[in-house]
Length: 214
Image (cartoon, rainbow, N blue to C red; front, side, top):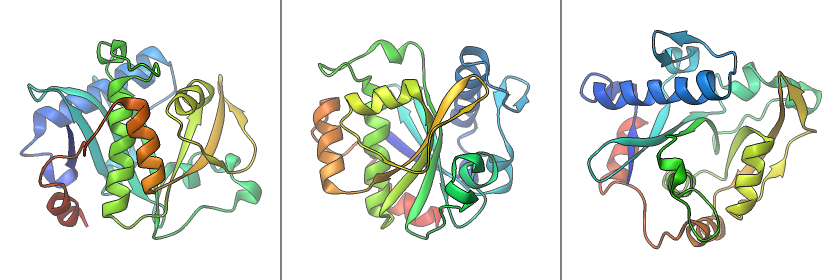
């Protein structure tokens, strides 16, 4: 199940936020060895502190975090415009009220072993479906994301095609891509098929939760 959270929930859901930031450190700092800002055993950056992201958290049946990601409107500060602008043709930002940015996609190492017949990780599939479902609730046309070559292969397994923005470039030790992903029934159907999901992945009160986040 996907739980929708914002910074307003940090006090009441402190354990989940602690799990999320620890997971992000394990993924981006410990495993990928990216140069990311750390605060103790957390990975947390200025977009968490200064913006009001929508977080999607994938929980198991016991309420333990298995994966997460962050969504930000492109009309305000975001990583593509402010950190990865080299990926933008002529530095022109993606800026639209109907396009949000997805970043900090993280999956727990143990959960990563659970795969579908398409070799797609189940938590990854749930999070990708969650992006599209939330996007539909929010009236989005697309979600933009920066991702590496490994994740590009995952997206191909998920039948989740991207509309490329500019040319891929090497950033640090990875080849980075920027792409737009349409928010549509077709995309949701593709993802559900690849992930073996037959119904909504969102918590029952997702519509109200998202409205409260606005």
